[in-house]
Amino acid sequence: MASNDIQSVRPSDTYHGVHLEEQGTVHAEQPSTKLATPSMQRAGPVSNAGSESAAVSAASAPCPPSLATLRHSSSKELTEIFANRTGLPKAKELEGEYTVVMLTGPIPTLEAIGHHKAFRRQGDQVVGENFFWKKTGWGHFRVEDSAPAEPGEPPSLLLNYDVPANVLSRRVRDRVRCVTPGELYLGRFNIMLLGKPRFIGYFALSRRHN
Image (cartoon, rainbow, N blue to C red; front, side, top):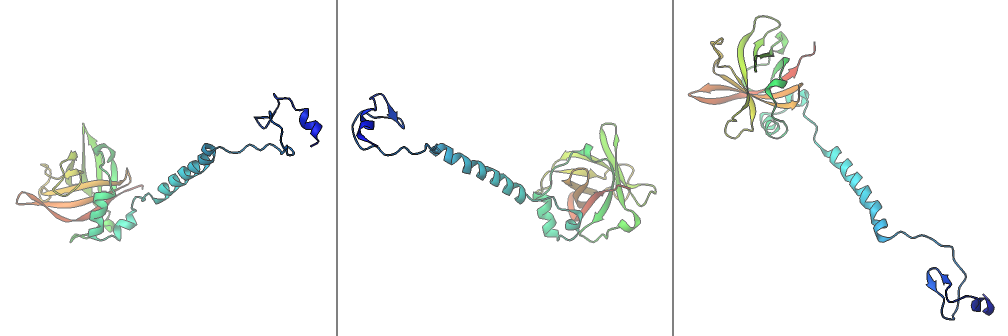
């Protein structure tokens, strides 16, 4: 830039926000580029990190175990699932018919002859009974909501067989927790001996859709 150009600049003129009040070397004007402020530079990565964190959390969240998983689980594994991977169901969500699948213990599963439990409303209570195919029910029970858990167990529904209609099964006490609401439940089969429940084995209740 020629010296007469420098002298033509008035004290009030500015160059990139700086007053040109002193004589000096003036370089050729560079195109103005808007730089990101530190806060702007931080905003992008934080937003991406949040999205990535949510995606990782969703991907790492454990899926509810399937009936196939329950079938192939040991008693120890089922105890862990019952305590940590199930929820406390409400008695009123148990309606309709559920196939009974015995998972552990001395009693074999009787799916081949249609063993299932049927739940229904009776006034303000939920009651049920066991069936083979569509024959007359046996093993009647009432569902007790939020019944106290046995020592060392999480809260559960109680299927209480201590009802007048039963003879041989009155000592049965089933404890049930939810795997998938309305579809799959995991239960502990107990028999009362000397006034205390004795654990016999695990079973699953799987919704019948036919």
